[in-house]
Length: 235
Image (cartoon, rainbow, N blue to C red; front, side):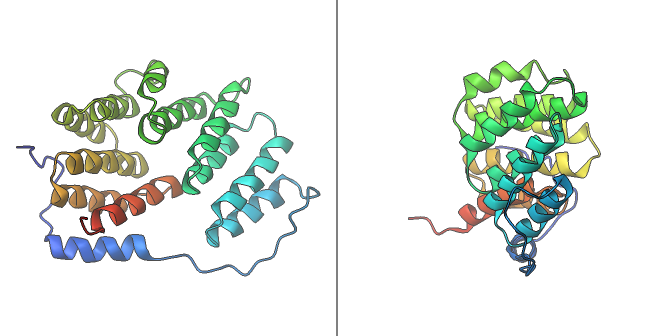
């Protein structure tokens, strides 16, 4: 029996479901902005165009705009992170992998952003590209004992089918950080483990806590897709 360690307060499942459906089901209104797609835009204009396209849920177009900006601003690690996240949101994991790898090939750059690139690439390989062996090679790039390192260990345990071990790592990772977006990602991974263990109610509860803390597009889209899968009727 897997223990529901993540509960912060009791939440009725029916109430949980209504709130989660509302949270992940709201779409962004179309911005109505028209931006020229030509290459004559500067970095700031490309990024503003990307923001407008995100509001229209055109994640692939937004990723292209961020890619144009990154070509004009070499060494901008944050832009590769943004482009990879948008490509993941667009359902293009292979393209996201290439974006993250291009960022890692950049010389210099912010060390913390490089570590985040390693973390995002690790998760992409392990969870979306079925490449656990490739992901393991990146584990040593994460600071030992950090929330991301603990989460990564949990993901490897989850992929390997060691669900109780995965849940313990996720609990440690969640308790090691007060940052909402990383906690949301960890709770999403927790939901994956509960679902694989056959406990859909605890999976939904983990998603409830995750969606209330998720800030970045990538985490929100992962939660939205997984919740839709949980809600789909069994064949």
